[in-house]
Length: 120
Image 1 (cartoon, rainbow, N blue to C red):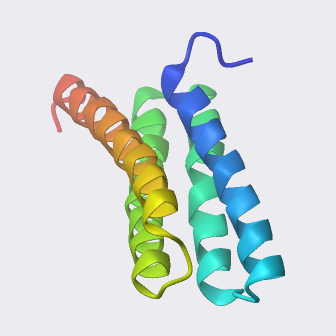
Image 2 (cartoon, rainbow, N blue to C red):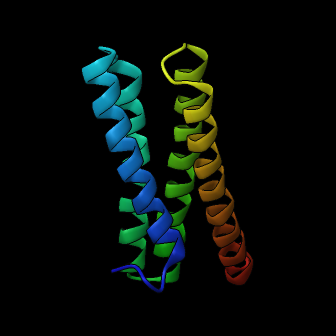
């Protein structure tokens, strides 16, 4: 499905992890507020990348990828907060955080390259 788009594949895999974490946190720990925020931002990344793949123009593509980057930064925040509040272990935090930072780096590179090519 995403064989030629590593960013899209990584975002999809991250979203799956987020969905499973939400199910665990809400069912096992009764935590709904923070995990719901992570669910929204963590799944939005891949959805926005998928929208960008079908963008109407390069500026539209840039806009969608920039919003995906913002969602990745927001996800990073919720992951840190869930960890610091004691809802997720150090191991889970480290794994999630590493994946999220990787997405941030990929999206940052894409956005920067496209901005440079568009002269923005």
